[in-house]
Length: 122
Image (cartoon, rainbow, N blue to C red):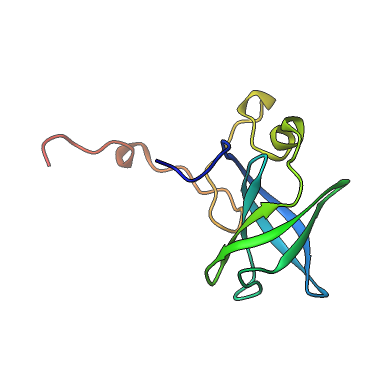
């Protein structure tokens, strides 16, 4: 059984963060009404830190509930409205095709036709 209370939505948005008087940029990888996952600069946050996040006019704040070297899970102080979660998340209905990218956002090249399928014989 999952510990999460709310469905998480994939995001991959660059956001501005502030914690302990320091500003830094992070990647918001997923978000829900009650929390989010951030990719952070190496060892920037520790469990218990208060983090303020800004994406344009949207502002959120929360507490780090877990952390490893490059990722942190936050629990928001106040639940987000579902419309904000949908705005921050990836929505395939917006029409733009999603192209595969590397972790730096660069579009990956298409594979040659012969490399696209794995043979059943081999």
